[in-house]
Image (cartoon, rainbow, N blue to C red; front, side, top):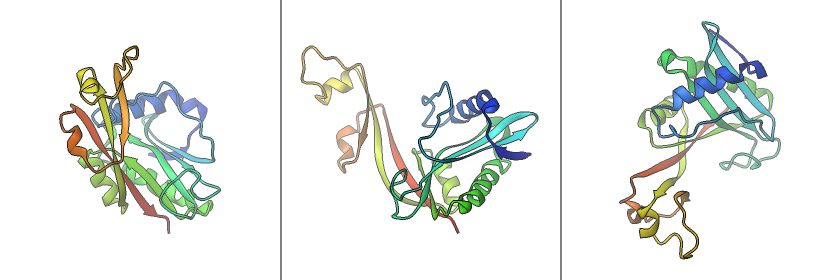
Length: 193
């Protein structure tokens, strides 16, 4: 396996790897048609095996504290994407990508990495195994049809939301128990030593 910097020629392989790796997660519907270009500097690595992208990690990092991350008053990096193609999972590729990214992060004087994920237990377990600590959380709520009407989201008679995606930071999640789809979003932080 080769871990190297992402290049523009990797885009289609990057997209395929990300889509397939997210397919059986709570982020299954977060499909990208092109790779993001970050506003701030970034660490973008890919893992190559069998002449294809089998893993990836993208970290946008700060040059000013709190400009990308939320957790600390020192320079951090936000892990926007980490993914391993399903045919190559459970081989340590994600861990090797993270290790390589941490080594690069040290060159930019980053003191921590931050990652947000949803309530996939196996994903949370992986972050904890990689020595990330859970710091905070909120909910992603998805509402459709009658769910929108029952929560009185719209009071306007000429405005008909069909689908709503919302962040909920309150403590009364019981109010949303009837929703078919809601996800706890969890922030994990890892010190870069």
